[in-house]
Image (cartoon, rainbow, N blue to C red; front, side):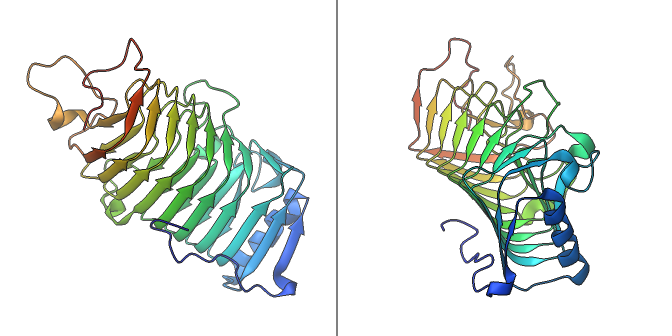
Amino acid sequence: LYGYAEGTTGGTGATAANIHHFDDGKKFQAWLKLREKNKSTTPAIVWLSGTFKKDDGRGAGSPWFDIKDTDNITIYGTDDFVMENIGFFLVRSNNVIIRNVYIKMPKADNVADGVSMQKSSKVWIDHCTFESINQTSDYEDGSCDITHGTNQVTVSWNRFIKTQKSCLVGHSNNETNDAVITATFHHNYFESSSSRHPRVRFGKAHVYNNYFDGVTTYGVGSAYGAKVLVEYNSFNNVHLPTDICTFPAKKSGSSWVSNLQGSEAGYLYAYSNTYTNKPSNASDPYPFT
């Protein structure tokens, strides 16, 4: 484990009584609700198999599994495990590992995400796949979002397939408490995705050794005073590798407009990245730091 989530152990040390296997999503959600009710911090390891669907979580209108008010969990997906139209919602939970889970992105009912983290810490999302099943704008929301003061997060070795809003870091332009966010993104593969790889407000992010392939809008974005280090990444056929907020970064008299409009720019330092197959319609300046 590298990055800001260093020290995350999940369910390490779980006793035999706290190692579980679920092939039924409703039973998994019931187990999570019991942990939430008891505010359990007992280390637990969970294996998931089969296919979980949107009705298996909180409900059809809220297609996610609640991981709330509970700590010290590792969730593993077996190689055949798929979550269809449903995600995870972490709130006030700490020391959580989610690994090897295949998420076919849920529709944005009640702003559902693939993985959403709020008011949590020490979270490691590793070797997961996020796949968009409908590339229509705003049909799906975030694939892996870090907001509302969540910190000490590492997102590593994941694959994002045609995701429209891949990784939001920092909830909104007014959420100044998100300045405490710390997140690392490394060795992720963004394949024909659109934007937010990540898109950062207020917090700090380290983005290194990722592969951006055919990204259609922008790669990494920084706004509202965020501090983002982007290094040793490979950008291939990417419309705009890096971007910062339009104002006040927009040069006097220039005609271009950033994808990240707002009242305060972010900081973004790009170091030792490679840029290949620049598209003919690429935005200028390229990249923008």
